[in-house]
Length: 574
Image (cartoon, rainbow, N blue to C red):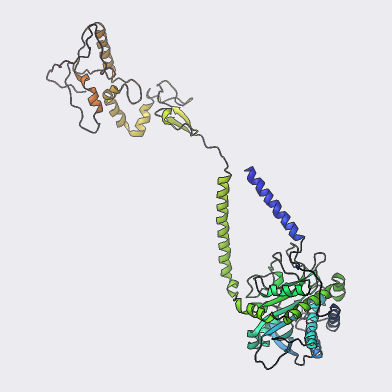
């Protein structure tokens, strides 16, 4: 038992050491030298962010201020060469408030035309914030949203500008979308997928990328909790360009109180975003987000040294630049990863493979499926616990004292199991005057301790029959209890008289009954009863203990010589 406790203690110490080590290590860090080759300079993206916040500080969902921010974004896209940039208006009802107005800003980059319906990639970022009075009259937190999500908007503007200025030849179209009303259940993304995209666009979309909160300690690239082809593809692009891109690890905590999309069976902080709408539609996704998930803290944090500024009044340009001075580098890293990936030769084939080979996960969103999984897990755990307990019980048995019992050795200690640990009372040779159990007097009704033991076990008939057959039993030298037993007092007197005559030289009278005691003794009890014999003296029989004993007289003749008995015509009943 001590050895087992020692082993358990060592295992616990090892687990604690591993947890502490993992908490202090960057498990999701890139495994290559970081020497970035940015497609867009960080300073250019920082200027995009400054201009956006200066012109659209208030972008509260479902307000006129949000509409003005959308007009600003449309104008910027037109300046970059997207003459088809448009506002896609939509009307929704939230919390029984009807006719809530918002809009998405959409543009398309196509490097080739006239080839029929082509594949496409959606690049998106939400642009609204929580600055002014909300649609339902609630006062919000005066958050400018410089980090969440001004950094994502400025990065997407930089990518859009890059496409028009560099004109890369791509085998697919790029749809650029700025989503409105995202702080209200990602309404803008839902409306775009449902009504803003054509059926052909939905079928042919091979990837959706979201840019959000590009600050914090690290930049994470999350593809899928399952093993995919696109994850190692993006890792390779990051390595080739010396980009500092992290991958979420298993320490990334689960969200328990966030809005969960119908098609997402598992939900971590890395999956938080409007891209989930596309994930739900089985479209491959890539989430680019800033955070620090390299600790064991079970919450979504942006930094291990600073508190979150997202969705607070501290989310402004001044605090962002002070808290995360390298925020622009994170924006340039995200923009470069997307641009260089789209320019890669194998990009379209990898994304198409993931789109065609990952089945729907809708079945995993059914509540009854999870009940079955939980019950099954509990059953497996119970079986494992029983197996482990059984194994440990055999390997490390716990000795417990066995209860001591008091038993009667009826036939003597030679017939008892002496190793059982029980206490035996040997009553084989107990006389009537002994105490079988010390301190407890014997039965006062009988001097023989068996007069009540055997009647209780076998009934009174057993004792009577044994005593009636005691003459036959005497031929073996004693009764069944191991004592010399005489039939009655008259037999004892007759035996003594004969012995006296023998010693005086007189020939004892024999009744002939002693000639055949062995035959009668060996006769089975269940066969015919022994035949009655005539004796010389009615009412007398030879003593059971002396019938097979021969005595020699002074003349050398046997005192037990058999003479033919005289018959008086009467039969003597025993």
